[in-house]
Amino acid sequence: MAETEEIKTLIETMKDVHINSLNNGCRRKIGMFMDTEGSLIPDSDMFNDWCGLAELLNFTQPEIEDMKRQKSPTQEMLHLWSIRNDPEPKVGNFISFLFQLERFDVIHECRKMIERDVEKWRKNESSLRSIYDDPTFRDPKASARPPRIEDTETVKDVGSDHEFYYDCFVIYNPEAKDQLEFVKEMSRILEGPEYNFRLFVPWRDDLVGTAMYSVSAAIIEKKCRRCAVVLSNSFYNSPSADFQLKFAHALSPGARQKRVIPIVIEKMEVPSILNFVAPAPFYNAGIRHWQWPRVAATIQSELMPDRETWLPEVDAWNIALDTSDVTKRELWGVTLAVQVYPEVEEKGTPDVVDQRKKHKDKKSRR
Image (cartoon, rainbow, N blue to C red):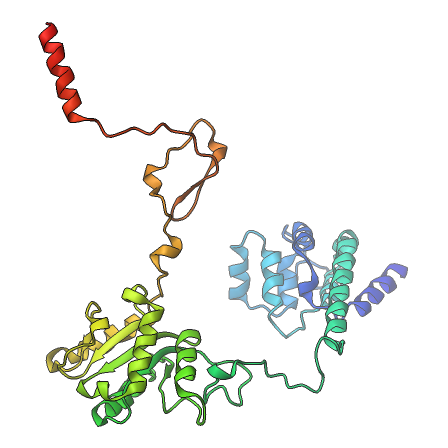
C-alpha cells in the first residue's frame, strides 16, 4: 500500500515534465527492461512489455510492426510519442502507464535516473526563464521583431517578424517596354507553382524614398543568391541597371560563382564584362522553351566558392611526406595538411652540356 502511494506521488510531481527530459542513458536502461518479451497481465488482454505500452500510447498495429524492426523498440516508441499529443508525452503519464502494466521493477530500477534527468531539466527551464524575464536581457516593451539593417529592408520585410531573403535579383530597365513585359512574364513563370522562386524585382519590391543605389547594392550582396540581367538594346539607357550589373559582377569576377545570369531577349552586343559568360538566348524562338528550365536550374544550383578560398597554395601532390610517422599527417576533404615537413635537399636541373662533356671524357679514357 505504501509503495502504491509513493508511485502515485511520483506521478503527480512529474505530470508537467515532458518526456524529452529523459536522456539517452535513461532510455537505454528502460529499453533493457521493456524490450524483452513480457507476460500476459491477468484479467487483461495486454502483455506487460513494450507492446502493451505501445497500445496504451494509442499506436496503431502498422506502427507497432515498424517498431519491431528497430534495434530498441522501446526507445523508438518514446521518440515517436514525444511528437504526439494524445496522450500527452509527460513523464508522469509514462510512470502511470508502467503502473498500469504492473512493471514495478522498471519504476524501481530506473527511478533514480528518471529523477536525476527531471531535476536537470527543471534547472535548465528555470535558468532559461530567469534569463528571459531579466529586464537587462530584453526590453519588455520592445517589439519581438528583430532589428534589421535599413539598407536591406524590402516591401515584404515590412510588417514581418522575419527577414526576407531572395533567390535572384532581377536587373532590367523598367522604362523599356520590352524589358518590363519580359520581367513580368519572368516573375509569373519563376515565382509560379512550378519553380516557386523568390525574385527581387526593383521598383516592385524596394521601398520608396530610399537611397536607390546603396539599397540595391546591399540587397544584391546580402539578400540575393544570384542576379539575372535582362539584356536588350534598351538596357544601356538605364544608369541604375548598369550600376547593378557592374556591382554584381564585382562580387564574383570572372563568373567564378555563376552569380550573374545573362538573359538576352534581343540580338545585341553583350556588355564586355559578360563576354565569357554563357547567356540564355530568349530571342531564338526555336529554343526559347528550353531556356526557362536552364535559368531555373542555374538559380537553384549551389554557389561554388572562389578557388582561392579552398585550394592550397602548394600542390598537394608535390608535398614530401615523412611517412615514417603516420601521426604527422592528417587527411582532409580536398587537400592534405601536414604538421611536420621533412627537409628535402633541392635538386637542380641537370646541365646537358656538362653531361655530354663528361661522357666524351669517359670515352676518350677508354
